[in-house]
Length: 326
Ligand SMILES: [Zn+2]
Ligand SMILES: [Zn+2]
Image (cartoon, rainbow, N blue to C red; front, side, top):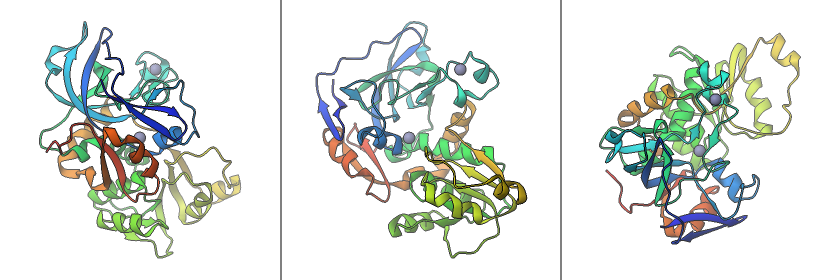
């Protein structure tokens, strides 16, 4: 079968002799319809994160149709359109048992420590495929996973419809945060230097940053270290600063900054199984997160899709079915 595999940094080849997946007990086989590309994939592509092996199947934001099941996997899933939840928590450890599956130390992370989904067919543990409502476009389904990430950040933040929100960064996560906050009845202010990304955020219900302060919630989505300090400085005393973007640099903050202004710093990592996913998927027909996509490529052009993704204002996705799945 065909698959898009990383063979060297910045080099992806679409091969047609990749081995067919064999379902282990409890797994289903998904015929992949499409896969979104995000910052994590690009970090692997550009060699900032190391793939466990080469050639390595890329991608984690996948959807498709269940075509068969392994032993002990539920038959009723066959034929159903599904989105993959690409973090397979063990569901047995102390973190999983308290519901914080995002912190599971045994988590299989699709595309990072477990093979990705940019292949015609993939094996997925049955608890980590979620059936989706009918009538969604391929772009909406390719954005289901990052939508769930953004929605979990909003859920964990405790923001209410009376809050004043600043969103820092309008990459895919920033855009999805703007979409979700707007749907809550808020008008988020968005700070983004790239004019096309800013325009996209405004189309999703945000207003452009004009330098005002007075925010009760700040969502930092850029993961760009120099953006953090100004973001914190815009927060009101007592405000919550939600950190979604990842960065390994030390924070340019002192405890004085946090204690005197009584800020709450809240990190948010992916989502917790299964509630965040099922709640997010139920919202897709109304939320239509495909609005954050810009470019669609066939699997044969995976190299071009990855190489240009960072420069595109909207999200890139790869369409394996060649139609829009509407
Ligand atoms: Zn992602
Ligand atoms: Zn666990």
